[in-house]
Image (cartoon, rainbow, N blue to C red; front, side, top):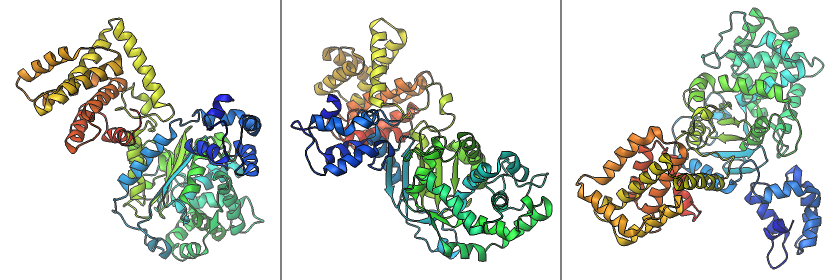
Length: 561
């Protein structure tokens, strides 16, 4: 309790503002259900000073949760660093103005194409947003996998699977193709989504199509933690209905080939389908819904089990193989995450057991997916171990970061192991030592000479990283010997690192890049030439440029490397 108090206290007292600021640093807002009692007490205290005893009484009922927040023990411990990385990717993607708005209904055609937002929510309720995340837009096809969830929940898997398949189609989302048994391929193509709407509508014969839609909207509200109102757009609905010729054709095809569930009225079925597309939400709301799916159906903000975990698993599987229209295979190959896009410009993405996020940008590619949203997803998995198969890398992801673990704690553990092995003469540790030394020397002599202050930097860096002490005079001898070889030292370094790369795991690659970084930027600046050299080293080591950019961002913010 004393340590928790000291983390927010100054002069023996703390305040409501200081406590909420500490929570915000961890990504937790005052609406988190786990600290509801603490926040109510804080509101009652107002601006009054809080002493040690008052602090203990304040958080006592929710001590474990507050402790996890204050001690940075949530699912993403380095939350601020993670948010800076997200902001960097957001800014990197923002200039992309390729693609075009969907134009088949006016409200989509006339949407501001410049809108661009990203919102993230972890399974611990940590939240962060960039840009236009509070703009209401129709969710369109983002609705499809969750309407399927609703059907599974209400009507069961056995009945639902009689009418909707679970196979990737490889065809455009609005194609009239069916499986050999005349079922739609999956719930994410129009035929499957329309049939799913028929399953739901047939289960509530006493309700109108709009009332059934309100039930589905209530589920969406639970998924998004009730952070804002789930809306319905009459304008979108009218436009959807007036341009639904192909969807009517699909509906009649389903009726004629497979037959409709419980002989539900075709017009009611289609009305439910179009209504689900006309539900309006924001990017921020969709990110919480995605986090609920990532959390096995339990909303991180409310603690409510909105959907059963077994049902969520089936929903995510469908999203994985069919969520990104007929580009789902490429998306799975490159991104490796379950996702669902909509032609209004939203993409909902799930990182199982970690977080959900959503992007919003109306310009679409030829498949109907948001250009910026897809680009953001690709860049995200280039930097973080989010791809479903990153765990197969054997420690060679190219130094991708795992936000589940404190990078500082991980590095300290790795360095401790390396120092111990080097002290006992381990051959692999000696190899790391030699590569670190050669990397730093070659960077310094790339300009043609090595200054005394540079030798001191090399010595101090080597001592800091792996505890190996070497005299500057000895470094002078080594550097002069390298200069005497007559070849371009930096080109030789890149060739060496390229040869050794297949034998180096992420830990060693990260140390080599860090050593190069410390030497290159010892003057406190990152000049274009220095950045180019670091990028060359990262490339030789198989480290994605985005990882280097994260390190550059940390350096510029004054964070400890």
